[in-house]
Length: 187
Image (cartoon, rainbow, N blue to C red):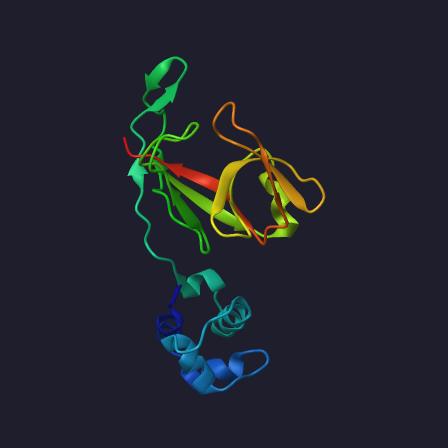
């Protein structure tokens, strides 16, 4: 996140000292300077304090990175492809912090070689959120299991394989799992 604290402060004709004194509770000009320069992380509470001192909103002080968009040329449905009635755009995939990926090297279940599976890690308190979803599970002896979460018996996970006819497996007390959140497929 890039802040525009300095630009807004200068546009309002305020000094570092003016902003520091206007903050509630007051702070030092050095702290405001560090927040402007990025040598100190700007938290949301700090952003709100500085915005109030400058008489603006917190969103006025933040410059988000530019994200490219793609124009939607057609909508595809049961009746074929049709032009959208209003202009639409989509954003290309963007990984969230902490995500991990699985690269498919050969066809497995519904996945094809070359597919990328972007996975969201979940702790034990969130395992139920992945019911009936494909997940990556670390094994205690090393390696992984990639399967569909079918049940949560006791402290384990009951997993169904992606290939028909293969036997299910139970993994006991994994530290984490990673739920498939996005499929990226190159055509």
